[in-house]
Image (cartoon, rainbow, N blue to C red):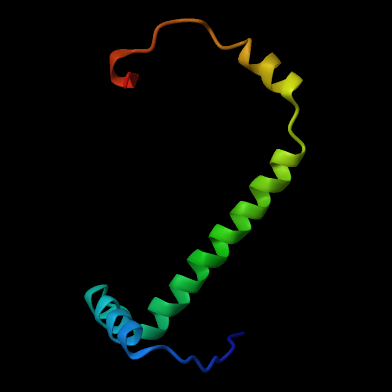
Length: 79
C-alpha cells in the first residue's frame, strides 16, 4: 500500500533535488522517498541506541574490556 503526499518545496530545493535525481537516474518521487526513508532510519537508529545505552552497565563493560588482550596494535590499525 502506498500513500500519496502533496509536498510543497521551495523552488531552490525543488530544482536541486530534480537535478540530483536526474543524475542518479531515478524519478524525483523515488529520490524524495529514499531521502525520507534515510531520515526515518537515522532517527530510529538514534532511538534504538539511546534505549540500548540506558541499559548499559559500567561493570559489564569493564568485565568485557578486561578480556581484551593488552597487545600493541598492528601497523595498519595505528593512527
